[in-house]
Image 1 (tube, rainbow, N blue to C red):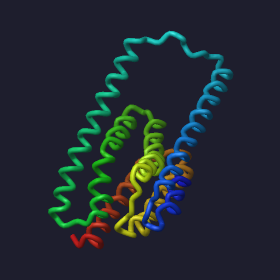
Image 2 (image 1 turned 90 degrees about the horizontal axis):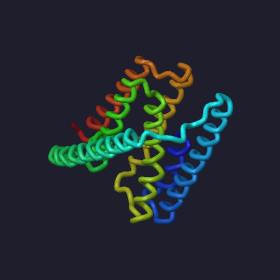
Image 3 (image 1 turned 120 degrees about the vertical axis):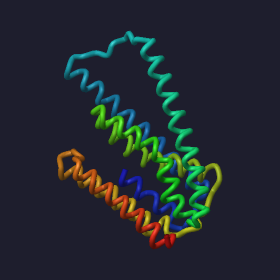
Length: 216
């Protein structure tokens, strides 16, 4: 995740992403996904050899179909909720007088992250910690490589605000590094104090954006 975040800067430091650069980001994303699947399959085979357990060849089709149905409905609901939140919030932001960069860094970022927030809270409550962290790490990689790469490949774009690849970009990298350090210091455990520190850090960042950039 950190490497991918750092990889984005050489592509955007000139405030422009060409179609070729977008294709390169997409190629890196596809390669990373293939590598991840390959490693996961190899680990699964090794685990089966150690435990002696084999996956059941018979799958409860009714449960599978029901689960797939719930996944589709849930994703559609989350996407729709985030979409109407973003549209409404952007309108409010423009009426208040926020710049496009600040709207993207605050309102749109929050709106598009609502599905991840809900997913992470539910996963935490159910004790699915690996899904929780995997969602966060995977989302950052997904947004950096696939979303940015697809946008650039479809239509090359330029950034109006240099701050997006300036201070705010390095704050993103620093926060990711702090998250990793916390996991290492506390033996791969993000406890409540760590969560509070991260939450307070985000609140401080929002105050900084609104006060110094938007003049609110």
